Length: 357
Image 1 (cartoon, rainbow, N blue to C red):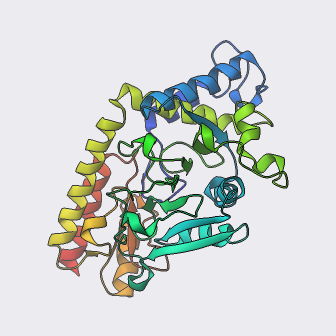
Image 2: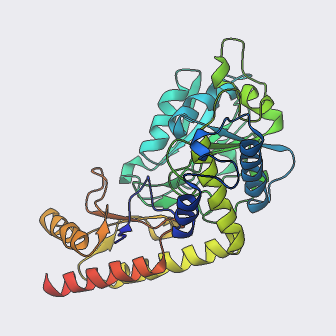
């Protein structure tokens, strides 16, 4: 029996995708082999990766002047690749600190140049997104970096910062969950293991004029130009992860695209937040104006009760709901593939627990 997996990542995938992968697992179409066994230089695999790229472009209504790169190393690798490639003129960038992942990005950037923290929400345990004004991002910097959605603290940008310099966003936990105007960004990067596919794949969407800025000292594999010029196949890419991502892109297209997914995600989040706002026992931890559609942390205010609820939820088939240690309590990650039935089941368990508490 499949459980409702509320993990922050790796996260649940659409069952239709898993079943298609199961059908193709031993022998992909007429190839006589599994995708995992294919040469990445073969015609069969080139068709897979090319379709995945074109489907992602279509899903996100991506302008022609952007390249899609399928890389490895997760968002953590991008924390280093972004400054190595973009800190080319001023050796300086602006960062907004909204949690653990932005702090890691800032630490990596400082190894390459100056990372100026223009705003932070650390004063209130990253429970909100700071108010940002265009004047904070003056000249003399190569880019502005934000973490679009914060998995640990359950916050997201509902309004993008206005800036005349390239905006770079870590969208690992929000990509494909709501419509995005790609033209507002210089770079979007995302680890796949939330809304795209299995761990091991990283998607980078980069404006073409930002490619080729890396200095001679930047290692070959950390230079965006290397991957852009070689169609993401300078070395062997994460072939099976890209294949699964391609199935997810197909699934989204068949089911109304990102606009339809956003409506579903807003409905799922609203149902859960409405219950939390009316509960006498459970409460959300993120500021209401900045609440995430993807990650919902909540607490009872009593560590023993939190632990008891986590155990009760697991007994009902609701797993990986324990919150991050920096927030405590619980966290329901309700990515694209989480069906609304999972939200209703969670609320039913919460109601029952609240009655007995």
